[in-house]
Structures are given as C-alpha cells and as structure tokens.
Length: 287
Image (tube, rainbow, N blue to C red; front, side):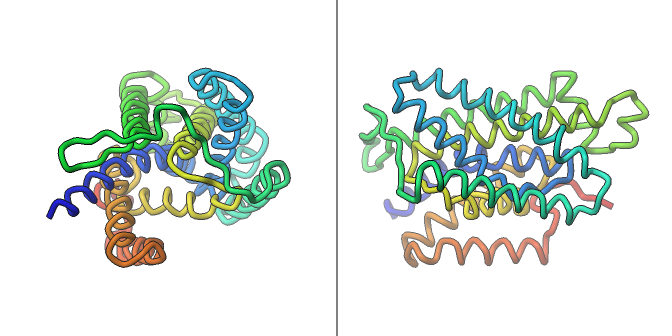
C-alpha cells in the first residue's frame, strides 16, 4: 500500500508541472481559437535558453526573467506578423502554419545543439527529502511549488486585472466584448504573448526534471493537448484535473505496465474523452 501512496505523491508533483506546462496552450486555444502545434518547440526553446544562460554563468533567477522576457516578445511578434494575418482564414491554415513553425524550430534547435540529450543540474537539487517512508526529490518539489505560484499568479491576473477581464470576455463572447469597446486584436496579442512566455518558462522547469532533445516537442504538445481536452477549456480547475489525470496515468502505467505503455494509456484516455466528453470534465459547454 505504501507504494501506491508514493506513486500518488509522484503524480501530484508531476501534475503541478503539467498544469504549468499546459496553461499557455489552454490560454491561447481558449482565447484565439488557435491549436498551436509549435507549442512544444517553444517549451524546448525556453529549456535550451535557460540551459545556455545558466552554463554561461548567469544567475538562475536572472536567467528565468530573461526567458520570460524573450517569451513575451516572441509571442507578440508571432501574433502581430503571423497569426493576426491569417485570423480570417480557415482554421486548417493556422494549423499548417504552426506545424511548419514546429518543424522550423525543431531543426533550428537541432542545428545549434544537435540531438544529444541535455540536462540541467543545479547544486542542491539533486538530493531528495525523506518524509517518513516517502521520497520527495528536491527538483520535483521546487518545480511543483514554482508551478503552483505561477498558476496562482495567472489566475489572479485573469480575474482581477482589466486586461485579464478583457481576455476572459473575448474568450466567452468575442462579439459582445467588441460591443463593450474591447479591441480583440490587442487581446489576441496579449494572450499569445502571455501563452508563449508561459511555454518558455515551463521549458525552464522541464530542464530541471529530465533530459531533453530538440525532438521532444511532439510529446510535449501532446501532453498539453491532453490536459486541455480532458480538463476542459476556460477553467483553472479543469486544467488541474486534467493535469492530475495525465500525471496519474503516466506514473501508474509506467510503474505497473512499463515505460513503453505510458503514451498508449494516455492516448486511450484522450480518445475516450474526445468521444464521450469532448468538452472535458469542467470545460465550457459551447453551443
């Protein structure tokens, strides 16, 4: 029975990271309607940028702020010069654009860093905390706490700031929001900028947890998509629920069935929700 509780603890810590990982994907999809297939590449871009800055002697906190700033700027450039130009086209056009962007970024990272597995080792985070019979790695605990802090700050921003309220208004009713004087193009730019910054920052967390290569983008995007579909768009509680379901499926299937079954089990759960509960557990029901 102890092993079950240890696995649940591992799933909880991993779920905290997955909620952070998926927050930008959910925000961009929910507000702009764009399913960003290049999302995983931006996560990896953040991981490699933090990795390079840290190895160059830049302080960890400063490196994270640089990654955040680059993410905000990259998102704004993407929206203004690419996504905004194609907003009136078929959704498939935007899918093709993000798919091409994913290929471009993947090959760009491969050109710079090769396919070697990189990992970020920080002194003091390689040990584990013992809580009775349970083991809590310091790196997973730190990522969980930081992810919780970021998600809480994002929720506060969306709930209480004027821009956050405008983002929620555009997401719920774009026409009604425009009638109230909200500029949708500006909100789309802010949302994409914020979503990209969240992606790249979560990439820094990703570098703490495991090794990474330029070709991890597909699995990262799939995880973010899973969380949004299973948890549902437009709800922080849905984001957290989807993250815990994904983390639990990976942890338990990996332990009892083997690592090779993790993706298969997650895909089965994803297909089940797409067929029987397409709006997710706590998502907004669209007409």
